[in-house]
Structure formats: C-alpha cells, structure tokens
Image 1 (tube, helix red, strand yellow):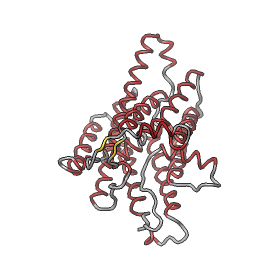
Image 2: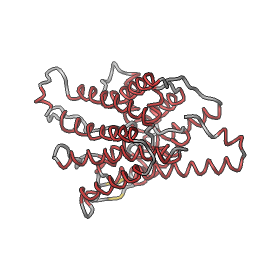
Image 3: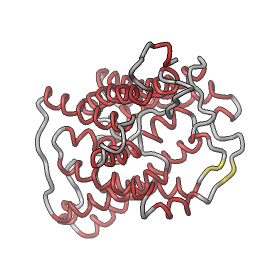
Image 4: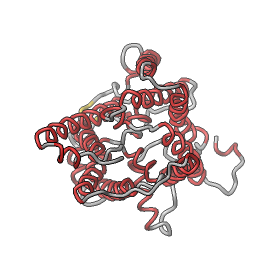
Length: 356
C-alpha cells in the first residue's frame, strides 16, 4: 500500500520512524497518566486498580489486532511469534529473569522508560544497563547463552496460536477480552483511567497495521512490528553511539516518542521532578535488576509490552508463555523479598523498598 500513498523521497523504513514516534508520544502520555505497568498490577500496593488498567489495555489490543486480522489487513503466519519450534527453555528462564528484574527495579521496562521522561535518574540508569546487556545477549558476549538455551525447543506444529485450538480465533479472542474486561470492571477504577488504558491498548493494532499494511512495500519490505521495548532499547543505544553508521528504525522512533510523551505529560501535570538513588544498596539492586531484564527480555522474546501486550494480541502461544513466565518470576521474587525482609526486621524492609 505504501506506493499508493504518493511518497517519493521517503522510504518505508524512514516512514516507520515517524509512525513509531507518533505511537511512542501517545504511549508516553497515556502510560504516564494511567500508571500503566504490569509489575504494579502483580505486586504493587495498588495492584487492584493497576490490574484494571493493564487488562483494559490488553483487551483493546487483542480485540483491535484480531479485527485487523479478520479484515485481511495483516497476518502473522510468518511472524517470529508463530514459529513452530518453540524455544521453551529460553522463554521460560528469560521470563522468570525478566519478572525478577522488574521487581528489583520496581518497574517493568515500559514503566521505566516513562519514568525516565519524568526525571527519574534511577530509571535512566536501568535503561542504559538493560540496553547494554540486551545488546550483549543479542549480538555480543552473551549471545552463546541465548543460542544454547534457544536450541532447546518443542515442535508445536500448527498449534502456534490459540486460533488453532477448537473454537478458533473468534472464540479465544472473545474469552480473553471478556475475562480481561470483567477484572477491569471490578477494579474500582474511575472511567477516565480505563478510557486512557483502552486508548493505549489500541496503539498495538495501529502499530501492526501501520507496519504490516500501510507501509508494506514488496520492493522495500520492512519488519511488521508494534509496541515493544527490548530490541528498541538496544537499537536506541546503538543508534545513539553510532548514528553516522546506522539509520534510525522503528524502535528508535518508539523509544524517543515515549520519552518525549512522558516528559510532556509530566510537565503539563506538574509532576516532573528529578529523582536519584538513596543508597549504594539500592543502586546495586537496580543494576542487578536491569541486567536480569536485559538477558530475560531477549531470551523471552520480549518484555511485558512486546510479548505481553503486542504478542498476546496475536494469540501467540510463545508470547503467552513469556507473559506467564514473567508474571511467575515477579510473584516469586516479591515473595522472596517479603520472606527475607520479614526475618531480617524493619531496617531491611526499608532497604528493600525502592521508591519508584
């Protein structure tokens, strides 16, 4: 379709950067205002309301994406989420590591990107550590770990998607959407945060359709992608230090847009403020958490947004497994922290509770 838009001097890749920038700006504003974060919905003190926000976004992401598939605008048959060889060990261990890391840093990767835009220097350091470790896992010294774990696979055959199960895409989409909305309805949220969350979720199908249909050009193809933060964070770091050698892509535009959108939202709301670390122990915990998320995000095939939101919207079994593993890692780590803090006394409890 890209050829019919009349662009002469702009390639699909260049146009995808502007698309990602727009999606990122919207995500940054909406996520900052709604407090969108999977960690909060699992182990936060306000997890009931936070889960309502996250699941509302998931419901609209799934519904919008599957409507686009049903209309023939996009298809995921050749997407990596639908690979028949499921790297079950890499996804499981990666998800557990990512979940543990986001508890240690008190924020999933998307939340930390948003917090960076609001002046949180702790979040900025985690992003830098995450991006460096993720890049090392993708292409550097940790790549052998990725390939070794990724070699342990299970052949799913045609069962790579919930759409292949009895009932097909329509039934499973309806079940996911209704279950998510049922929890959101009982979350105690007011209407405005849920509307914002629904709008955030709609950014997922906009990304899929934008890159997979609107910008599709058979002579100059680009990858079909949507909201994610693992590869984009690594790409952004690499682009920042070597922009004269490599062009910007979708991921760079997305991260830049999220930072800008969060900054705008924080400035308009008067919530922008500089924040930093309170102790060496807290610094070490954040560094460890960022490293765990860097390795885990790559092994799991995505973060809470890339696999959890955008991936689940495709009905991919691999993405759903990653989301379950991330949740399990977060819950297990939080339980361990509570156990340690409970036995060590209130001083340790204070030390183990970083400010978001």
